[in-house]
Image (cartoon, rainbow, N blue to C red; front, side):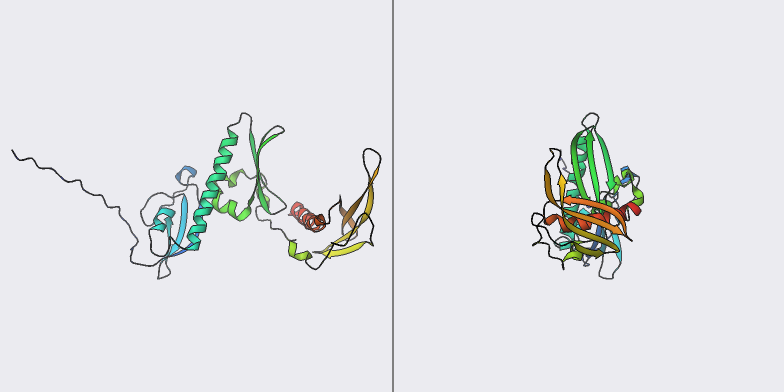
Length: 251
């Protein structure tokens, strides 16, 4: 009796996009997949997507594909844009892992909010004990951590962007100022706000007096903010911080 052995049939995955074309990586984002109620599917393999790449063929037609499929198409895998996207997805995955880990602590609560620095604060704590506090770039957050968007406590400030930057103060040199020796008041006008910097003495709880820098912020003659500090390096950062803080509160 002759025995016939059937060779296993190799299953070939169906692909919709031709492999002999050349593609270009356009951008990427996370949509949470079907578990977040999003039903986008890969236009190459038809599978549901979470990590999404937008690619463009030689005819400049764009397609939505998964990152795995994107890597199999000519011109994509070794491109800088693809590698940056891969790195961003890995970073987002690591952030989620830390969040999930710390939320397992009994009584731990998470607070996500926009800040006046123009980023997103992710804070997990139980009463006074902090488990996690990270500041995430806003564009990164809404692109790769979009599943957390609904948890932002102040969504009305999602579109806030900082106005004051380090470059605004490049023409100012505060390195020779000394709060110990004193100096003539320095006046600065920036983005519609007036700042006056001088030296002062502040009484400590022990009764002694400490010499410090004193920075006051005005708008149309009205005092808005006052800061005291020791380091020259804090002058620029305090000016920038106060401008963005006031604008953030008004946004």
